[in-house]
Image (spheres, rainbow, N blue to C red):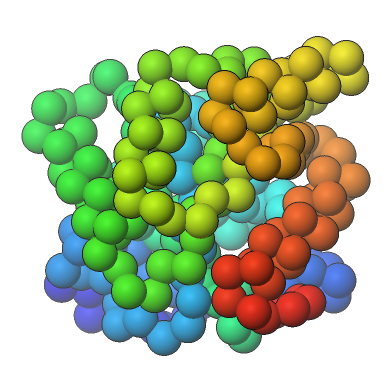
Length: 216
C-alpha cells in the first residue's frame, strides 16, 4: 500500500501562464488509489502514443513524467495535481504486446476499474497517434469508452511527423471514424501553438462537464 498518498514532490511547471503541476503518487491497483478530493481527468492511449511527452509539454515541465522510447514503461496510474482544482491521472498504455499476460491483465484491470468506478473521474483525455487513425486497439477503446459513457477529449499526437495537409486529412478521418462532434486537438510536442490550442479546448470542454470556467 502506498504510504504517503499526497506527499507532493517539488517539481513544478516552468511557466506562470500554465497551471502549476506536481506529482502526487503512483498506484498499481484500484485499492491503492488515493482518496478522491477534486475532479480528475485521465490520460488514456495506446502504448507509445506519447502520453508522458504530452504531459510534460502541455504542463511545461519536461521532467514531470518519465519518458521512454520503449513502449509499456507506464505500468502504474500516476497522479498529478494540476492547479488547485483538478488532478490528472496518467494510466498505463493499452495494446502493448511485449509484456507478460499477467502484467497486461493487471494493466487492463487497473484501467477498467479506474475509468468505470472512480467517483471523482470527470473526463478522459484520449490520445491517438495521428499517423494511425482507426487501428484495432483504438477502435476497441472507442467502443468501450462509448459503453461507459465518459466525456472524452480526443487529442492526436505526433503531429510533427506529418505536413499540414496530412494533418488535416487525419484529423477529419478521426472525426468521421469515431463520430466526434468536433475534430480532435492536433498536437505536436515541438510546437507551442499546440499547447495553446489544447488549453483553449480543454477549458471549454471542462466547463461543459463541471461548470468550471477558465483556468484551474
